Image 1: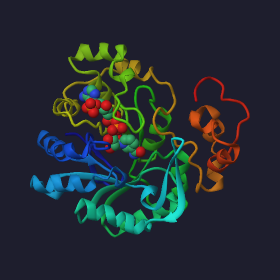
Image 2: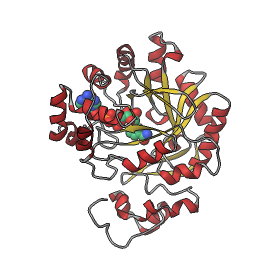
Image 3: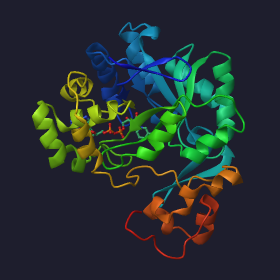
Image 4: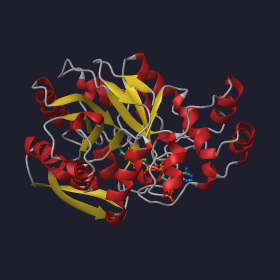
Length: 338
Ligand SMILES: NC(=O)c1ccc[n+]([C@@H]2O[C@H](COP(=O)([O-])OP(=O)(O)OC[C@H]3O[C@@H](n4cnc5c(N)ncnc54)[C@H](OP(=O)(O)O)[C@@H]3O)[C@@H](O)[C@H]2O)c1
């Protein structure tokens, strides 16, 4: 296993297991199988409702706590009642629990004295307060590293106004169809490690993204190395110093996804994969997440480009677009990049 050293010296395995949507009846077996194969990092979240299942699997299997690296995430779902309307998530202002008790709940679910990496799941209000709370746990030594997920540059910069802790990690969507050269470079230049999420799947679904898995350009590179397309894509990310957390509960795919350290891609092959970039988020897009972001950070130039926003944003009523984002464009975005 290769490791990435985070900005506070903590070492994080570069390959881990994503656990979102692994069925309840499969999770315990999957965790044990993965551990026995050499997986040492497990990516969960309060919102995946499987923290307790993962803890139970590791405990029943006799795994020492210090032998595994656990990432979990704090989600606004834990704090307020809400739901989905027209496919869009909404929150009421009716509190479910405090930020501190939501964090404590993950400790309880994971049956652990310490958590290796705790992320804010998405830049949803009140993400600034969530950061202060996580910082408190970090400074007490109960969390080894704190970070963010789905954060764009202005969301990260805003944290700098209230905290001297630079996020150790930003986890967001990266794939050959969304290469994320700019955000990856911004994070790396600022000492923030990057984890790729939802590379091979469609939004909140187990449906595989076949335009990547069956892509003929990647398939040709894979054939040359005697590897699968998924292994080549994982390797392409690992060579960019990105941490990967592919999710599967299939035994042969689990082994495939961790067997990526015995070959290398050439610069030309790396480039050929990067050239598939469409430059847009295909799963979760944080551009409309501007509530709770201090005004000066809402002036960020990336927010001025309508092509960066997801399609649903343009179907929302004007008042909602104003609430969510800085601008309301009268025309549809040009260039087909939405
Ligand atoms: N922070 C966030 O907001 C956020 C959002 C999404 C995900 N995540 C994290 O990132 C992890 C990964 O993302 P994800 O679960 O959305 O998707 P993913 O791991 O990128 O893709 C999962 C899909 O890829 C398929 N797959 C996996 N390995 C394969 C292989 N070797 N060959 C062929 N197909 C393969 C799976 O098929 P099978 O199921 O059939 O094996 C499944 O359809 C999550 O589990 C979660 O931990 C975080």
